Image (cartoon, rainbow over all chains, first blue to last red; front, side, top):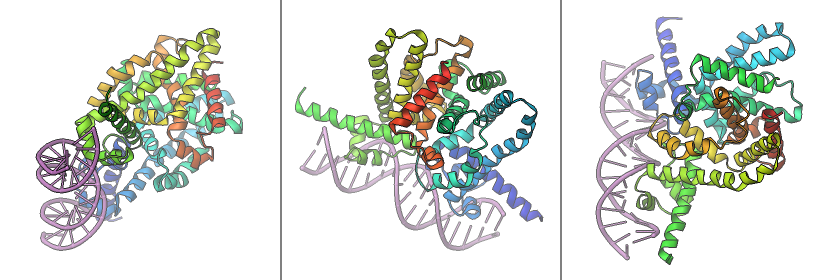
Amino acid sequence: MNQRTQQRERTRERIVEAAAGCFAERGFRAASTREIAARAGTNQGLITYHFKSKGELWRAAADFLFARIRAVIEERGPLLVALDERERAREAIRIFVRFAAAHPEFFRFMLEAGKHDDERLQWLVENQLRPVYESIPGMARFAASRRAHAQYSLVGAASMIFAVAPEVQRLTGLDPSKPEAVEAHADFVAELFVR
Amino acid sequence: MNQRTQQRERTRERIVEAAAGCFAERGFRAASTREIAARAGTNQGLITYHFKSKGELWRAAADFLFARIRAVIEERGPLLVALDERERAREAIRIFVRFAAAHPEFFRFMLEAGKHDDERLQWLVENQLRPVYESIPGMARFAASRRAHAQYSLVGAASMIFAVAPEVQRLTGLDPSKPEAVEAHADFVAELFVR
DNA sequence: GTCTATAATTAGATAGAC
DNA sequence: GTCTATCTAATTATAGAC
């Protein structure tokens, strides 16, 4: 790879990461390409050059966010096989909670996308979400008829406190991003779903 | 109350309800006063006349949404005292889940507001959320040090599946708004938190 | 009280300089 | 590949007719 191609990739990466943050914080419509460009340390025209449209940038941002959760699954999944069934389910849930704490933008992005039945949601479900849906941890314990209820209860219980962290801080005084709070939440949710 | 005052109140109510829906669906910034006006069957200029600014309309919308949850608490709360402690906690959670199913816009509105630490969140916490926070059901069972974790786990588990209903439908085929799905989710979450 | 017209900003996409 | 300038369309808030 020559220097120009490397520079190109680094610039694209900076823009995509800034876009993921902006789309998560503001939603697709309210996120502006000018703000994304500024956050990436560049200009608005360059976004059109690299991504053609705001919609394509959004898809690149989704791919960026899902690459991180896939990495966690691939990295931590194999380590769980040594544990017995119940402790494996608990530890998988703790890993999931820690991911939610480390990447609240992932869940903010998903919460924004999941509430509108448009072409973006369709693309997201088919290309990103469906492939990882089956790997949500600890769900084999529940009957198929309750699977969706268990999945979304777990995702909600694990991620909500981090998705609205500023509200939690103002309302309760607890800062959910602190390591002690993350571990307390991981233990609480793991114990809630696997007793 | 004379006719003109009645007409005024009905118009304001229509605008506020439309605003609550738009702010929940799109967030504060992306919701446009023109779309709100169109949904309320009127025009954009009238919004400025009645509410002065978009920010004040947002506060009126928040007040409208919280009035509904307060009404449920006041209406259904007294009926629970006849039950024993555990069944009271379970039934309170079921009522909360049914509210989340009937009013996903409440939770979409809150999820959008809760992720930005701005003057709107400050107003929302102090004027609307704090007064009802203590009435979230079934939480007396948990130690004070775990209260926030329990509260947000419950809110997340109860509401997420309805907040992202279009995603759930596309991904799993389940329509969470159907009465059978609502009851199944209510039972699942109640059983999850009170065994 | 309701509506139309408009002013001042800001948006995404495009064109072209370098 | 990067950046500035600009076009068209949309935004909120305002002014004023009725």
